[in-house]
Image: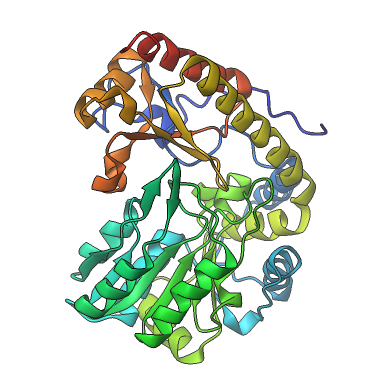
Length: 388
């Protein structure tokens, strides 16, 4: 490999939310954290060089991108996913959660219903409830170690609740599904029939494994809003840059108006540099990273099968966040969380923060050096291997 993903970078003492805020988050000190969805790898050196050049300039005034920024974003999604977009269709925001909140306010009214599919990334709950909207849930079906969509429940809940907006997670966090063409088309048919606007969070689209293919929902429904960002892909989330693709002019105008009402205008100057640089120069780094992560997934798969067979790895189709099923131990969620935290000395994401459907699960982030991963797996083995 041209890039070193085995290098362990000390993150403690850097105000890292992942490493430095255990006490503030109600956790004991000294845990190995694999909870938050950022990576323990340095951003691509090509991106760091462009950021350093901008830093050396020394002036961080208000900035707006030129055509080359929009071309870099469009080229990435066009060449990799076949989704074509133009400059006028791209709306910049400081993050996808921010964008989802703006979409909820712009495209629904107070007490309108918004649909999500649980278990799901927990800010989805927050952006609905915090904005005075009614939450409608379509729990995914879990059988034989795999998740699928309950389409009958989806359509019934939309009709019964008068759902106006559906927030799709694609690829899905935390269950790791990469939705197939026929699944997306069936969701879309229901949403079109019921006049439901779709916002598709596709932040994990660059991490899809083996035979699976990410299909941008914008290719299924040109009126959908597609939320993207370089943050997860290139580990630059703290620089706060994301992009919405909004082809429908009416929806675009409503979103822009809502963002304007929030008082937000220019993105972080270095975020703009990082985004353009990553989409222009980060392709080779990403391919090597994906190969490394696939080896981490395989190592986890083999470890569970041979040494912790009662912990079931939900086979990941996408993302670097693995969903672990501990249900065979018969523990309550509180007991499971206690054993993970106090026994294994790990900080993972408890399944129930993604909704009650996550009972019996933990989410683990394997985007870390392999030595760190094996340290975490060894801790799980020491705590759980002897449990009947």
